Image (tube, rainbow, N blue to C red; front, top):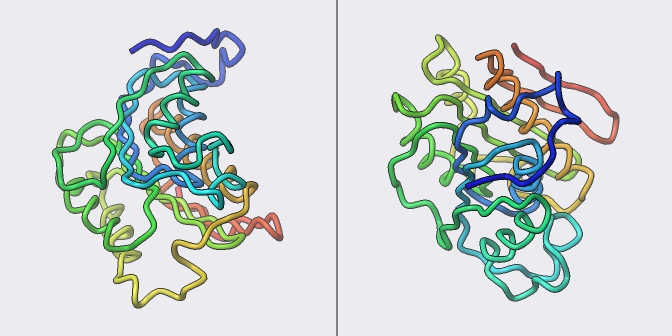
Length: 219
């Protein structure tokens, strides 16, 4: 798949030849915006998973348009990304079901159980280089960028995995404010470009959009 964009303007910032194939699981408010961002920085191999259809309440916080209501999210996003960048993404119109994963994997799912299932197929997988997990709640953004093969990173991430019923409701799966979705998508995209370019992962960035304060930033 080719990206038709003229990317000369980002010369010296990010070389699109460094981009790896990406599997993006979940294309709601954060995932849909991230898909467009990845296509626009030069990713040429992007696979997206999602089983849902676009609903009217999705429109304000996501990349979806009013005309997409009622369509499968993966099909609507494929149109949006191709119109925005020329990239034809690969679409899987269902939830992730434990298929083999490789290269770069991004989780933008709503439940901790879904994250656990994805992590089960990332951890110890020699074919996966970088794993990114985005979480948003109201104005709180939390993004993990993990190389499971680096000492301590997998353990750190697993410490932040626990059943959904044990989460504070406002801290998991609550989203609906476009600036927060954009912020989470931007942090994820920057984490990926840094990892692809330098081999380093940011591990965990937590950001409170209301105060513009970085709460955690581990390198």
